[in-house]
Image: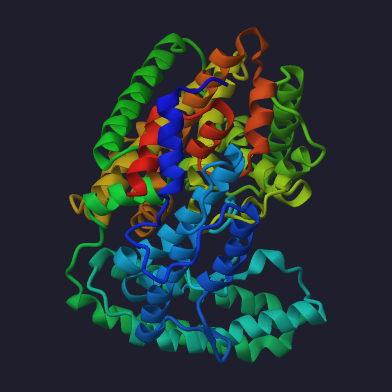
Length: 552
C-alpha cells in the first residue's frame, strides 16, 4: 500500500499529538512510552476507572462522585498522551485511537450529556429483551439486569444474582431523586415513560417468578414500588422542566470527530441524510412503476404461516450467501438467525413488522447483527482493546452501518430478483433511516422537539408504516435524543462501508471479491468504520485530517 510523504507526516503528527479531548498535559505528566504493552495496561486500568464507584453495592452518581471522576479523568488522559504510537503497526495505532475515543466519551458525558443529572431513563436497569448491538444502545447506569439471559425457573446461582440486582434498584432510584436536577423537558418527560415501562417489566417478572422462584417476590415488589414512586415524582416535577434537550451543533460536531471518529460535521450529515431521503423516495417510485402490474405483497396472517415463512427465509438467505460466495459462512451463523425468528403477533403492525411480514428475508439481511454477536462469542478478537464491546456505542458506524448497507448490497447482488416487489421494501427502509436521522440531527440542534422529530419521521417514511400511534418511532427518537449520532450511524456508516469497498476494489483490481472484502472487514472487529478503512485501505485524507484536528 503506497502512502505519500505528506500523508505519513500527518499520520505521525496525529499519533504523536494524540491528546484526549480538552485535556492537556501537565508538568507532572508521566514519561513518554513507545510500548504497545503500556497501552494495553492503561486500557485495563481505564475500563476499571470508567465504572462508577460502588457504595453499598450501588453505583454512585452523586455530584461529589462525578466531580471526582471528572477530575481524575485528566490523569487517565495524560497517561494516554504519554504513549507515542507513531511507529506502531496501523492496527495498534487504531487501538490507541479507540482508547482515546472512549476517554473522550466519558469527557463528553461530564461536559455535556450528564445523563445522571438530566436523563431519567439513565436509571432504567431492567431489560427483558436482548439488544442486537454489542452493548445496549444509549447511556445507562451501571448494574443492568438483562432478564433475557436467565432461564426460568432459576438455578440457585442465577436466583442469587437476580436478587442482588433487584436489591440495588430501590437504593439507586432513591439516589436518582437527588441527582436528577436537569431542566431538559423532552429527556425528562419521555424518560419518565421509560421508567414506567420498567415497572411493567418488573410486574411481568413477578408473574414469571410466582411459581418457580417465589422467594424473590419481595425483592420484585420492592423494586416495582420504588420504580412507581420515582415515576410519580418525575411526573410531579415535569411542569418545571422547560429547557432544550439537544446537545447543540458545536457539541455534536465535537462528538462526531472525537468520540465517533467520523470526519463529518452536523451540516455534512444533514446534507447527506437529505440526499439519502430523496434517493430512497426516487428509487422506490421507480420500483413501484416497474412493478405496477405485479400483485402487492400480502402480509403474514397466522402463526403457522409465520413459522413456515420465517424458517424458509433463513434457509434461503443462507443458501444465497453460500451460492454467491459473498462471505465465509461460519457454523454459528444460521443458528444465530434462527434463534431470532420470534413469534407471530397479529396487528396492528408497527414499522418493521410491516416489512418483515411481507418478505421475511428482507430483515434477515439486517440480521447481520446476530452474525457479529455470535462471532464475538465464538471467535473473539485477539486485541484486548477490541475483545469487549467499545463504550459509548462507538461501534455503531460499523454495526448499524454495515447491517444497513448489507440490505441494499443484497438487493444489488440479486437476492430479490425473483421477488421484485421485495425490492421496494429496501427503499422504504432507507427512507425511514434517513427521516429518523434528520430527526436526530434537528433535535440535537434544538430545532425540533422530540414530538416534532416523530412527526417528521412518520411523514417522510413511505406508505404510512411508521405510524405516530406506534411505539417504534417514539422509541427511536427518544434513543437518538439520549445518544447523539446514533440515529445517523445507520446511513453514515453505510456510506463509509461503500467508500471502503470502493477503495479496496481499486487497490485489488481483478483480485477483489466480495468474500475477501467481507472477511477482511469482519476480521478487524466491531470498531468505527473509519478506523477499519484506515486499517484495510490506508489513510484516506479525510480521516487523517480528522485525527490531526481532534488531537490539537
